[in-house]
Length: 403
Image (cartoon, rainbow, N blue to C red; front, side, top):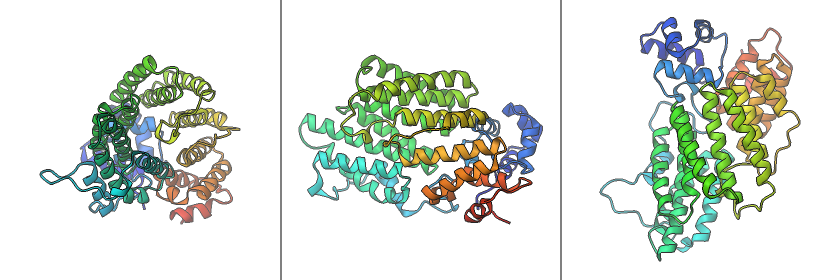
């Protein structure tokens, strides 16, 4: 059972030797908000509130978000699969480099296909399987990046950068932001030696996400905007360039929203939505799995998320109503949309609508839902309502929080 958000706030507040009034002053929140959380009258909070609490408590955002979907923390050492990922990302000092594990598969096209398949596993939230495969793929990419003529090594560095970017994403999902930044910094280095001019800005977008998880919102904003400006100057007329630029714009908008500037974030998201309409008319890249996730659907999903996080549930439901997701929308984005819709229905008091969204989420991503702290928090909030809607008990029992 994951720790209740209010219990976390109270525990971290006492560690910091703060009163509720002191935490309110440092975080810019009202004492009433903090009191309601600690009294467990609410099980969740908007992401803007969570960022403010993290700032006031002097902790990373992940300390409040709890265990991410994937491998829940047990308080013990890293599992062997994660240790292997760590060793692949950051090989041991003073040790000979490992031999490639699959010499017969060392062609660049096959390696790129393996990396694309690994990204598909990531977007399907199959983190356990991805941890098993990633060390070998990273090792193979290091080998390809070190052999052959100059152009072959440059193409190999592009593959290495892309798989190290994936390592960074996986580490973020597992709550290991320091490992994520190590992997992403090495991905940036590989990008600089590669033949792909869009790889560095794509990795920069991932670094911005890691900064957001660490509550470094200004750093995330500045990085995303700087990278977006560079892409707009050099690659404004090709589909891959617009996709990367749009993803960076969405990232900057997210940081603005979490910093409290929702109007600026909404303006940027509307600009991104127009770009998504334009990119849909352009020729598709050869393998979109290796380019930023950016489409009309992804922008609209992110707009719904920002509205929910900023305490605008009615707007979120309006944005989500009648959405038709494009076929290339990753399953992980679909699950996030259902979760955000459930949160929005809960916030407006529509318990039946929330349960309907949660039932859909349970059908499409049961393991993801069971390990996700926000899903648990939403069900807890619904469980405390005077009238429990039909279907709620089944979901609460599934998550292990029924009376």
